[in-house]
Length: 152
Image (tube, rainbow, N blue to C red; front, side, top):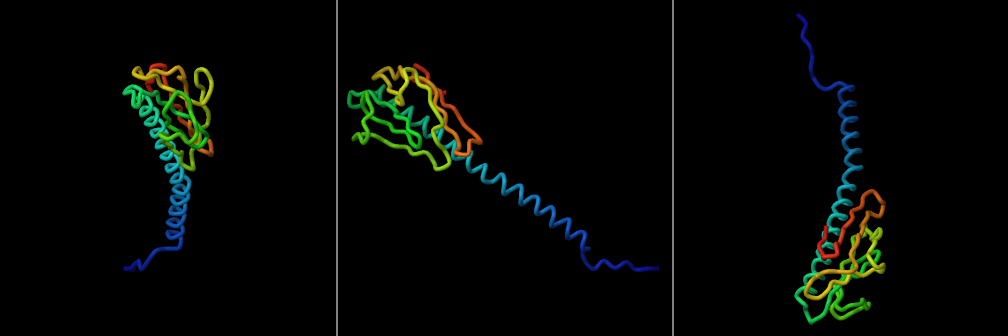
């Protein structure tokens, strides 16, 4: 009877394992950064929506007997007090977008870059859409502000 020796792995088995690991590593290097980018976009969309809701609620509650609004810029959004945006206002809050996201565009009724909510009702004449996009344009999300002030 012949005895078969099984003292280790063959060169072919090692090459196959290395090839499989290389493929898995290459795929993960491609997809892992994409997940981080999409998370940044989702976070900034949620922040924008929260800022819009805050401005509307401050107007509804008539804080300081003033309306509140949102001013849109390429890299940030500003929540401001009053019927017009004045840069550097006393009660403004700023939310800067992450370095992976930018304001791709907006289309507001009446033009302009401000959404101003009416005191007590929370409605706006500046309803429309706001689109945020990843800087590499691989994904974008649109936020819709209705005339009633509701965000979709």
